[in-house]
Image (cartoon, rainbow, N blue to C red; front, top):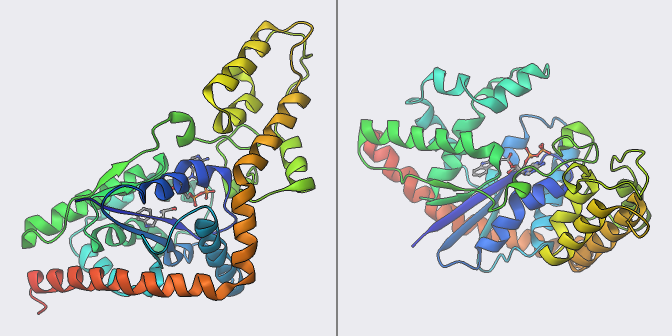
Length: 327
Ligand code: ADP
Ligand code: TRP
């Protein structure tokens, strides 16, 4: 039987990249047979968020977002990372068998340095905390976005170092990527990778005028509607491809390619995109409003999740402590 685990860092508003690249797979996996652990990586968020109010709001945003989008706390252990202190204990144990060289190779750390972000120790050891998250629950399948694959490989390496030193304590996890490449790198409004740090995101729950305004910002060019176009080079088409069924998408593609009289202009594509976003997310927006109005429901779900998570994590922690001679 598989144990599924994944998480998302609570460091800002959830955007379409987070949904298609990560959360959608997490939510879909709850229908598969096995155990399920999904959490809000709030300790990880602390490496970038310094304002306590903002951090609290971001945790709620992710909790409400996950539940509104369909994560079911009855079937899944849904919890906050910081409610499971065993994970930080495992982080220390793993750090004693992990070489500096492994962490120095982390793309995410190198990227942050390249962007001039202050290199705090927590940012450097981020992958160890993430490995502890994964290994604490004996996870076998970890659905993640492409940019998390290296972290997952590091978790496999750390499990290997520990096991080869102290015996079989940790289960080796495997990554599971989104099936389609287009979900693995959702473009932002400017065509670069969508990311909260680039200010090019489209918030999942955007609606009405604000949604119209955001879609209006999707970069286009000055070609006339009649001019035949390769849909591959039309950013709006990439956005549509996230939402439309294959048949309808192919039709839009053909009409763009053909050009001429009846060809759609960018305005048409934008209108269809807004409709498609509304169709997909309307029920989740409604559910989100209900959850925001009843914070106790979310708190109850997280408390229940924390109990389930701690039960498993404390067993793993005990196994690890015994193996290395601390008990
Ligand atoms: P951001 O880049 O906005 O800071 P995070 O690093 O917090 O996002 O990513 C959270 C999760 O969402 C990760 O699993 C990541 O793979 C996924 N993700 C983020 N942006 C994208 C994107 N543009 N396309 C696909 N997946 C993404
Ligand atoms: N690093 C992930 C993100 O940026 C969040 C995360 C923390 C995670 N621990 C994890 C994902 C363990 C999968 C497994 O969203």
